[in-house]
Structures are given as structure tokens and as C-alpha cells.
Length: 391
Image (cartoon, rainbow, N blue to C red; front, side):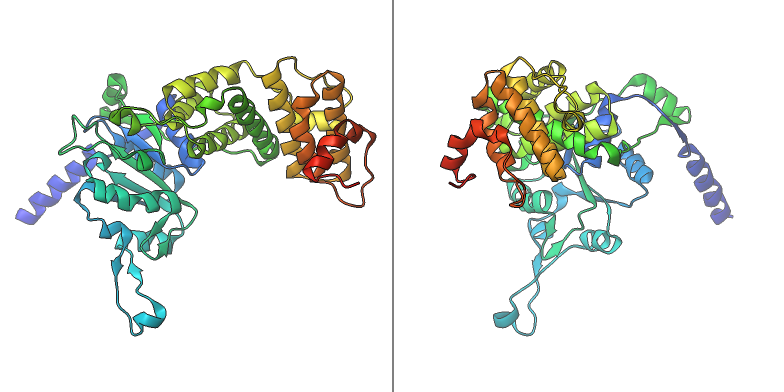
């Protein structure tokens, strides 16, 4: 009788946990999906009990991939660095570091999502051990498969049990997203319908142009604002969040590439970019993108005589960088020569200094069997000094 009563109770509990999903527009969820699609580690900041874990489980279900949850605060450094296992010949073979079971399951599956929860409650020694896991995807002697995605969650130090600020090296490895709840979403979800979490679909046909435009935009911005290439905040709390560094600018490059390729919304990109490089640099870069409006480099290479060089210096550099990046992605004689037509127009527009760096990169792509185009004469001196042009 007791077993039947418990079975009925369990059946009722299962009914309370059953729900359906529907498409919904939530920029922070879309920013999470964009970063996960780009395979960038994401850190969700939010108060306890607001649905971070549930959102990630929906994301894993949508990807059709398993999720492994690891409570970082209850682990020792050796759980991430690996436990030494002495073999038959340690002097010859060394001592391997045995990985934990969750890492072995992910490696066996070949893909998955690993969720490090309560990161801000993990002591500094554990955070240090996580550095290699997050950056290199190594757990002990085990290399996690490239398809494994990493997401973490943290409560603000004021809300976390024995909370710690994140160390700057660990914080600088994440895209930081601030997680909040929406009362209407919660009400509808408890009524049986939660918003679906979908990963943006990358269009392979846009990939080359997307990468070229992203390279141009990032290079143009950092040339105009070199002080934002690396800026470590002064206070401890800010160092534990998002701030600009060459590593996080590389994250922005990937986010922007995926944004162009998948066609995500501008506000979604803005949240992800700010999450990578912080409020100040992120908002300035997003504003820069709004005013950039680069021409499609592939269309320019297809008809280089028809385009006009942008007037602003930062846009000129961004555009020329995008064109050379597009040539690099698929090098042939026709595209290479079209690149020189573009650079020649930059010289005619009176900005040879802007085109000089691009000329050196383009010259390095030349096949020795290709004749030297007349447009190269304008850069002969700088190319000979750099060793790109002999004689």
C-alpha cells in the first residue's frame, strides 16, 4: 500500500515538473546562446534561485547534448588538476594525473556542456586549478573534446556562502552575463510554458565575409583606441568581472563573426560584447559598430573598380583590413590582383599610410608565378624595407 501511495505521489510530482516551451525574445538568453555557439566560456552572475541551472538544462536539451554539473565550491584543487596515479615505471613514463568521472564521460561522448556552479564560493586555490580547465580544456591528463562547451554560474560575493571575488586571470577567461528574472516569464512558466532556448544557426555561406568584416572592425577600433587593448581595472571587484585584454578582444572577434554569420540581433551582440570586455570598452565598441557600416568585402573583390573608399580614417583601416582578410580566406590570382586595385584607390585618395600595412600583408600572399601588378609601385619602398619585395 505504501509503495502504491509513493508511486502516486511521484507521478503527481512528475506532472508538476512537466512543461512545454515556446519561442521567446529574451536578449540575455540569446546572448548566452550566441556565446555557447561560438564555444566561449560563459559566466552567469545572478542571485540564487532565479533559474540559471534550468536555463542551461534547456540549452543542453536544445543542443541534444548531455550536461554535467560540477559544484565548484565543494571540490578540491586536485579534482580539476587531477589525482596522481603511480604506474609501473614512473621514472620512465611519468605520473599521470587521473581526471574525475564527469570529465571522462564528456570525453567518451565527444561533446557536451559542463556547468561549473557556485564559482564565486570556490576558494582561490580551486579557482587557480580551474584556469587550465577553462582555457585549455584539460582536466588532469585528459583533453576535453573541442565540442565541449563551458558555462559557469556565480552569485555576487554578498549573496554567496563564504563568497570570494574571482581572480583576474579566471575572470578574464569568461563572457560575463548578468542574469535576472522576469516576473511575467516565471508566472507563465509555472503555468506550464517556459521560453525555449535556441542556438543561433550559422550560415556557412556568410562565414568568409563574416570573419573578414569582424577582423576589420576590431582592427580598426583598436587602432583608433589603442588604450583599450588592455585595461586591468584598479579595484578588486571590477577585476573579477569583464575587462579588455588581447584574450577578451579575441572573444569579441569570434562573437562578431558568429553574429554576422547567424544574423543575431544587435542588442544580443551588445550584451555579449559588454560581457567580454566590460561596460566602458564594450559600449564604445558597439557604438563604433553602429556607425561603421562596412561594405561587403566579397562584393568589392568581385568588382574593385566600382567601390569608393570610406572617408573616415578608422573606417578606411577597418575596410582595408576586411578586404585583405577576405583575400587570405581564399587566395587566387584574380582576388589577389583585385586587392591591389583596392589599395591603389587608397593611394589615389591620399591615404597611402593607411594602406601600407595592408600592402605588406597582401604582398605576402603572392604566388611566385604571378606577375607584379602596377599598383604595387606605390608601396615599393615599404615592401622592400620589410623584405616583402626583393630587388
